[in-house]
Length: 299
Image (cartoon, rainbow, N blue to C red; front, side):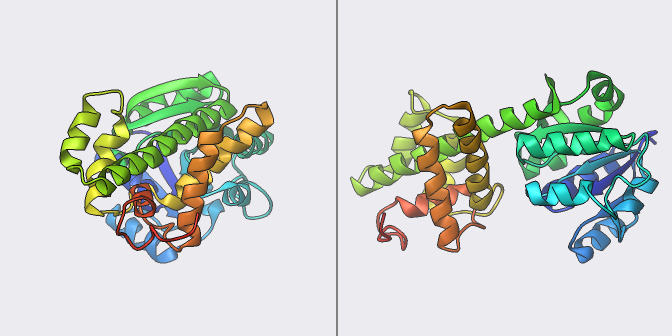
């Protein structure tokens, strides 16, 4: 049995599978919390844990608390005001894994320090399968001494673990990772869609892409899904829109033009507008392939 008692706030697909991974390795999962109480209750039974009704219950019963929330607003809610995670939080370490703005991570750190607690931003460049297998790629921002304190726990979740500087740096790097990934995904959808329109064998085209400058990690993960219209969600189009938006806001603040990233964001926002934000990001191909129901939508 490991020494640290671990808590989780946000036990959707990523948070739940991270909790399962740590439980498999002998960590005690002291408490789990989620706005969807049924989800938290089910996971608590599975992991012999406790479904906490309040955030304070998680803090009170755990040493290290992972948070996996959807956006800046949710991050603010769990770290601010009455009933937040920071009531009686002295000595606790919060590891925030959400893809939110650097400012949201920095504000959480400021509030935690005022409460005598510590914060790390652990940005994840991986998906559900990697969370369950403990092979996440983690980019961690925060104080080096805090990082060293929980490095063993983080290592048990990851295949690659990098300390990248202050808290905000992790969010900035993650935004850049997802910006480039989203551009690549939208570009691949256009290349394969155009190939289909010209009558080219897409498996041949995909093989040639893989051996040339058109190769990418996205080709490996999403190419067949685009061709076969298999868009089971690992990273949603709605999240792609949100994350490209974060990157584009950072670019605007830095005075850097990113027209390709804006174009990719527009594609994903279009999917959200069409009610398809829950599809995997590979679903952007539905906007580009000929003969599909969305290819007649106006630009």
